[in-house]
Amino acid sequence: MKALACFREVVEWSEKSCMEALVKRMPGWRENRMGNEIKITEKNMISVIAGKGIGEIIQPLIREIHLFDTWIAGTTHLEDKSVLKQLRSGEDLILRRENNTFDSNAILVLSGEKQKLGYVPEKDNIVFSRLMDAGKILKAKINEIEDQGIWTKVSIGIYLVDL
Image (cartoon, rainbow, N blue to C red):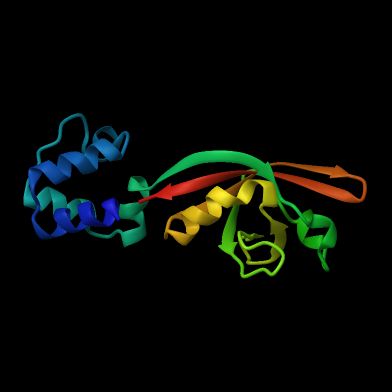
């Protein structure tokens, strides 16, 4: 929630220190938005915020920290395998904890459209399930898709979303 706290500081207090922190976390902000020089005043800060949705303001403050590379397990057991043909390298995927009788640490992997793709492999999921249970936000990105006959190997990276 660091991004939201800084956003609140910018809006509520208009303090120079928070604006400088905002500028540091937004690479190229000075050059692209204010020219070569920046003068921090309440009026300038309001003009930065005006006309932008909260997502546009907070998004540059969000970092994704790469944790691990693995693949999606269970793709051969999907009822509708056509979902795998729609996937693209670099695509963001959703990770969701699942109450599973076979694996107490199960993490479901979903497409952006919330279609089931499979699971984080059991051998890899214990640390990630603990992070998710502690309230951390994790996501996955597709690294590579390989059709290997009856099996489609979808290699993914797992990321911690740091706000």
